[in-house]
Image (cartoon, rainbow, N blue to C red; front, side, top):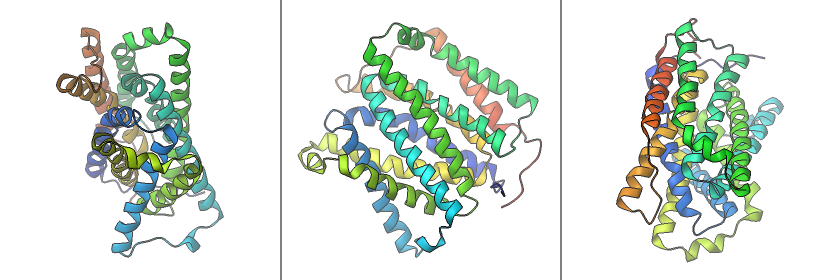
Length: 313
């Protein structure tokens, strides 16, 4: 089986990866707000439906809507795999978030890009230099230091918190499987076509469990949070898919590891101006050291020179 090869435009890949990090970093806050007014299934269904509808309009205007007839058996199987596992990821992440906290969710979901990066090395034959492996070690140690207190809290947490954390771990594994399948799909389909099929499939999967009538009773504040979650899905995953088209998956995954830092900064900012919306998180000296290590390790992996430059696709 021929494997997907990225374009080699690492600058664009880096920019798209950073955009994804920003959007995913602030997403848990918006999800927490939306969950105050709607259930998990309705929230997830709306995110996929809005993303699907907007993408249909965008591709329709550009006359780039994909044809169903172009889907052959191997492509369809990969699309089905991507759709099912992304749906699992969305559902379990929001359920885990509802039972824990925004920062805890971002801690545990970082298992996803780590598995994805290692999977890219295993399946797509991507390679790290010695410098990048050192960066990976620094990144891993940085997370251990950065989330030291959160991990200690996890060990002594009530059963509901532990269950929510378990759901987040499963969500992370599901996301890594989705991402690896999507990476290979780029061999046959454009990133926009892939996301269109996935958004449409996921919206159908969640439709029987959603309660659309709840949306019409939302306050403007909660409605804005819900719409933002939908737009975040469309833009962030579009940027992520395009990043995989131009850059090595292992490097994209390293940049994604910065998302928890964005979440922590965002939580502090929002809690400072609106403490009634979200509770503040206090960053200790160890947390600051850990954050520096995470950023340093991530950048060492992302900006390190590949031992074997990829061919242009």
